[in-house]
Length: 309
Image 1 (cartoon, rainbow, N blue to C red):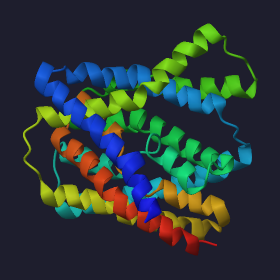
Image 2 (image 1 turned 90 degrees about the vertical axis):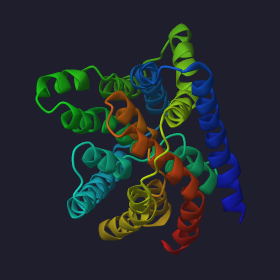
Image 3 (image 1 turned 180 degrees about the vertical axis):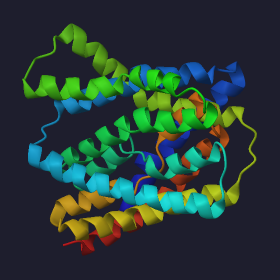
Image 4 (image 1 turned 30 degrees about the vertical axis):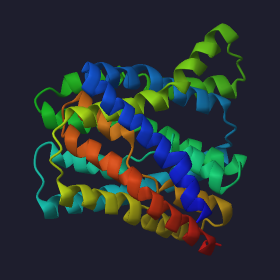
């Protein structure tokens, strides 16, 4: 019950308040959601990724093992959602929208505080989650853009590649590792703005989701939204558990990896949907509902994690 209450009070309710503020701001001022999404892609998201990677302490062994797990997990979930897409006979923009709602998950502003709650500030488990966050920042800014752009603009692959190459995140990650590895200090006049910008990421992303929810007509596609929620919140951690067993990973690292798979759909799926006008209503409903339902599913996953030796 303590875990349930903590997730509710420290994750879901604060997120919901920010989303409601976004809805109100849209209704009051008709905010431009395209501007908000560009701020997230080109400014706030790169800043928080850079800051977390630059300040982290990651060993090569930890990076290798975590990346192996993530690769297998991502491939398994991708194949699973492809089967679902074909069985459900999705077409057009619903194909990448459904896919992204399952394979992109909230590994930063939800998973990192959750990780530190469950493992009581453990630096090792935080490092595991930061590596997952790095990949969940990189893939939406590369493959994610390609998938939604291809669905909305099938004949211009060169333009899609040019867009991907303008994404700051794909350059920020190697630069952060390089500067950290060489122990290059960043001057305070430069690092202070990075701190300011990264601190604004969560608020801006949630306000963007609220603006999108406020601007749409609430025609809930119940079956598709719930299907996405089940795949993300229930099947996801089950697949993660199977993979740690397959790889022979145990102890606290296995628990951290399974927990990383249990979080709700990422805000990245909404930002991509809004930026490329690719089923933004469905994506927004999935993010909002999965965040609410995660109160119960994440609590169950945390309880079951004690059976991971």
